[in-house]
Length: 435
Image 1 (tube, helix red, strand yellow):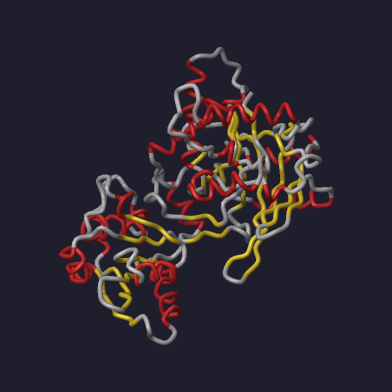
Image 2 (image 1 turned 45 degrees about the horizontal axis):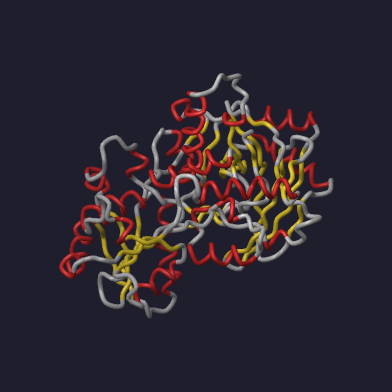
C-alpha cells in the first residue's frame, strides 16, 4: 500500500557550518515570534529562514516571507552552505531526548513517500486541521518546491523486520552526529538491496500520520495544482512528501496529553460550571494541598485504560481539583455529531471538547483561538489558573498508540490537538527538494 523511495537529501555542509545545533530549528507550528527572532540571531544560516521566515509590514505579492525563503534557499545552495547528497538515500534518524527524568531514543526512517488521497486509506489521519495552517504550508511549497520538515508517520513493524534492517545500519558511520539537550544521529542508507527490503516491508500496510496533518494536506493540494498545469509521468517530485516513519512499537514514541486551558468566560458561566459537571459526571473534590495529590490525579486518569471516561478540572471550585467520572456515556454520545464512530465518542478528549467545552462553556464557533489554550504539563495547567492567566483547566490522560490506530482505521478523526508527539522532529537535518 505505502510506497517509499530514497531521495537526494539536501543537508548543511558541515565543512562550512561547524555546529548544526546553531542552525536546526523546530517545525513551524511551535515557533513563536519570540523564538523566531532568537533563531534569526543565533546564526546567519539558521533554518528558520526557510521553515518559518519573518513577515514584514512592507510585504507584497512579489516580496514576502515565502519569496525571501526561496531566495535564501537558492543563495545557500549557490554558496555551498547547503548541498544535495550525490546518492539517493533513506535516512535513519535516531532522536535522543529526556522527559520526566527518563532518557529516550526515537528511531525513524526518513523517506520520500508517494502521496495518496485520503479515501484510498493508504495514509490515514487521526486529527482535524485548520485552513490557515494549510494555506501557509501550501504557499511555502509553491515558493520553495521543497519539504522543509518531515511529517511523522507511524507503521506496524510486523515481525520487527524494519527495526532489524535499520539496526544493521548502526555499524556504518553516521553523516550527522549532534549532541546537546536533544541529540541526533543520522545515517544515509544507500545500498539498493537494503532500500528494496525496507520498501517491501512497508508496501502492504498503511501509514498513520502522527504529526504533520497540515503538511500532508498541503502537499496533496500542491500535487493537485501541479497536475492541473503539467504533463505527467507520475514520478515527479511533487507526487511525494518527506516523512519520518516510526514503528508503533518504538520505545521512544512518547505522546503527551494537550491539557485544555480556558479564559474569557463570563462570571455566570464559570459559577454554573460545577453544577453542570455534576449533571454528567460523578464528582470528587480533591484539595490541591492534599498529600499525594498528583498521584491521585494519575490514578484517576489511568482509568481510561479500562474504557471509562475520566477527567480532572481545576478552577470550577476554589482551591480544589474536581475528579470527574462520566456517569452516562450514552447521554454524552448524544451531544456529539452523529457521523463520528463509537470509538471516537468514548474518548475522554471527545467528551471534554463536545460536552464540557461546547455545551457547558460555549467554546466553539470560532471562539477557540481567543479563549482556549494548551499545555502538556498538568502542574503548569494548574499554576496558570492559580496565577489567573486562565480561569479553568481540564487535565487529560495521553492517548495511546492503539487508540490512534483504531480511530484512523475507522476513517474518523479525533478533535484537533488530541495528541502531542514529543519532541517534534527538527527542521534542517534533511531537506527534500521536489525538483
